[in-house]
Image (cartoon, rainbow, N blue to C red; front, side):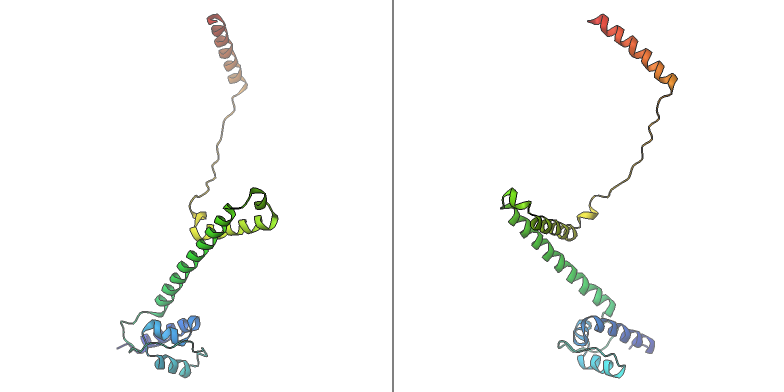
Length: 165
């Protein structure tokens, strides 16, 4: 049995989930009796519409937290969305692979390809693959004395090379 504060907290989390997906889907996702969740909505004036029927279950401590259910549902939707985005981008580029080079340079088609490329980048998370690193390199320039010394060494080497010819 939940304490009063735990029950209130659970109802508030259920309300948060119901605001996102509706009373019936929230009840179904949490394994609660639909009538109980509807009664909570009436009693506490949640003003949330009913959407779908739900399964029946009693409120118990083993019921998943509404926040966890919402996170799991959003993760599933995200995976399905990324899959659809990847399929769409793949189909677009496969279609463009069959076109002539001149057709690819038309402005509307080029813009569409760029957008499909962005969709593919999001779906495949390409922007996270290669991190760009800024590198600063300090190259010391030789002083006038060092340049003079290098020129004298070069002259000596040139003289040796001339003798070898």
